[in-house]
Image 1 (cartoon, rainbow, N blue to C red):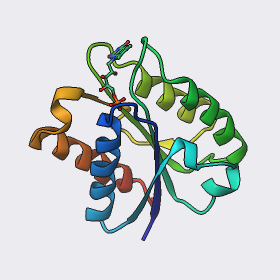
Image 2: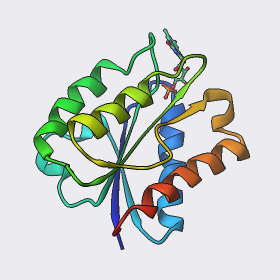
Image 3: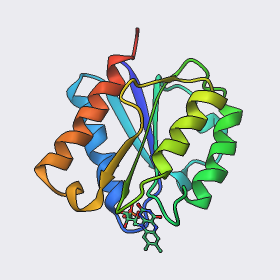
Length: 148
Ligand SMILES: Cc1cc2nc3c(=O)[nH]c(=O)nc-3n(C[C@H](O)[C@H](O)[C@H](O)COP(=O)(O)O)c2cc1C
């Protein structure tokens, strides 16, 4: 069984909901998932011991949030090369953040990124059955790479 850390920031709760559904997908595929807010992770040691990582934040001002940028500098110290990764976030019109997070995980941290790419979800779909299923599927897809 693999262990996945889902770390996120959410201002109004949409990306938080996504994190919960992604965790469900991870658990449906027989793996364990831990969800943490970015602010709860104080040092790189707290990122040790996982096989997969999904990082998420919403898009504000066509960018990832400032705390996600700071968090990614902490992730750099955790040396996650070769670990499975994915990135997600809620948005309304441009949805830039997940792609930028995913890019950093892939090219800077050299992680084994899910072939689905980054996962953007329009905020009005987050609470729908369709959105919930899409999140769960992303969690499951992330796990396809665990142990491979
Ligand atoms: C001031 C402000 C700026 C925003 N800028 C963008 C943007 O550039 N692109 C986009 O797709 N959504 C943008 N949004 C929409 C948010 O990404 C969207 O509401 C998202 O679902 C919030 O997620 P959260 O509930 O996890 O904080 C913006 C929202 C606000 C309030």
